[in-house]
Length: 164
Figure 1 (cartoon, helix red, strand yellow):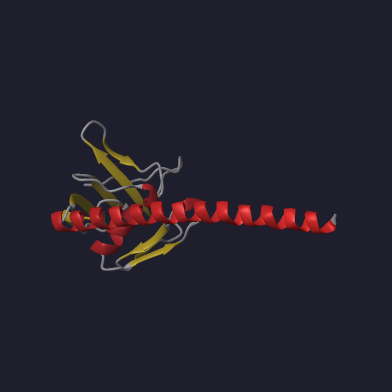
Figure 2 (cartoon, one colour):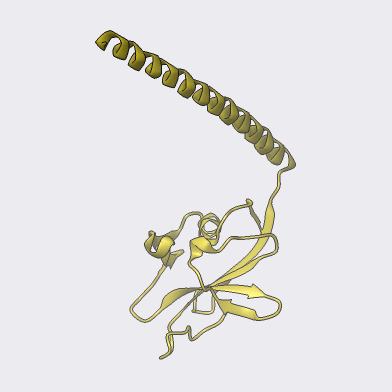
């Protein structure tokens, strides 16, 4: 009786191994096909050299404003990445409370107890608006316009400045 039970268990285990191996082989095949298709797609995109163009201004709050017009941006970049690129990495930030970087300095101009870096978005209908999300959530698209301003806030907690 024990021998039959042992043979039965072994038979079931072999069947399970064969079934699992079949699924693993199918998964690996599908994964390889998807990876190959992705490599072809990425290669084609690189050949096309797809880039967005964006405009960004940094207002240092002392009369100095730097416009970065027609900045070439890779699809999928966010404003934090673009800010790092246009400032050659000269950004101080802490990461990642509320799923975004908190920028505390740009090009050597650092937050104080009463002045901070503010992010602004622009659209032709509403003009400039303070960003409602963190810098990492602001995707940069073709023809998008953003601003950084360095200023204090009023009693309501809103910036007491606006972009040029």
